[in-house]
Image (tube, protein in one colour):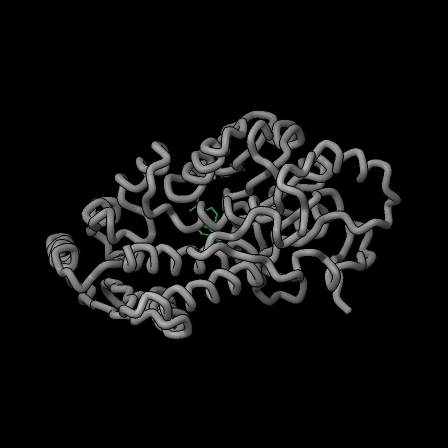
Length: 341
Ligand code: NAD
């Protein structure tokens, strides 16, 4: 039997039975159907949930787990079916420059992940000595190659190569990571486009709970160009009221406490504490931080104090096993969208 450790240290029963363990459903293109993973109604009134929780005994399991791994599996299965039904090959082309070890391992894993769902993976390599013009030239060549329909550039690029310049050269129609400023702009306009994968993953995970975002108050802790800002804009598109915050935001804990949805994307280990969170709120933890564990070994934690916050929140995504796997699934979905366009 598994469970969630409550702030008191007691194991809260329920992880086995949490609705997140029920099979979530997706539509034909791999979009998670709202609320289906929890079997909640479309317009779940979060205030009613707060009241229910306030009236509930303290032993009642609080947060339901938004299981990014389970959700990502569902998306992957639907992509497998889409690829099989399309009857034409789907391929991801990736450019790796230099010999950064982590980037090399990431590329290898990506090849495996793609193979698992029937996506062909072509890795283009340039040496660490490649100049900015060499890298730009290769991206431009891949842009005009009709066989290349889904393209990404692995980071980091060697020193002296301007990452943003290279990203801005990737054809917006092929830019499966959504890093070209044109695609970021399309997010603002709400146009159909390739959306940055982590932002997409975050929104899908919130919507999978079934809460109706329109009129809700949301806060995004962290405002980087590729993570925090696109998340805030995607939330704005739902007609939620959105606070975009950063390390200079005053009274951040008090602001978060007023919000129905808290997205933590700041890169500060376990910054969001239990007393930052309104009872029943949806908490999405985007952070990935490597810290020293109790036994001196490195462990991965998010930007949310999971053990404490899961005693207060209505829903919470874990780290690992939350936004990370869903981000990978959203990249794969962008690849399939771009390739079968
Ligand atoms: P970043 O360093 O580029 O930006 C951090 C942002 O957080 C900035 O806006 C900064 O002002 C803000 N911030 C920093 N300290 C803060 C504080 N104390 N209070 C409020 N705001 C604060 O980081 P990033 O690239 O946006 O990544 C954020 C986190 O998300 C990191 O942990 C990163 O590893 C993780 N991440 C996860 C995924 C995923 O797939 N799960 C993808 C990308 C990034």
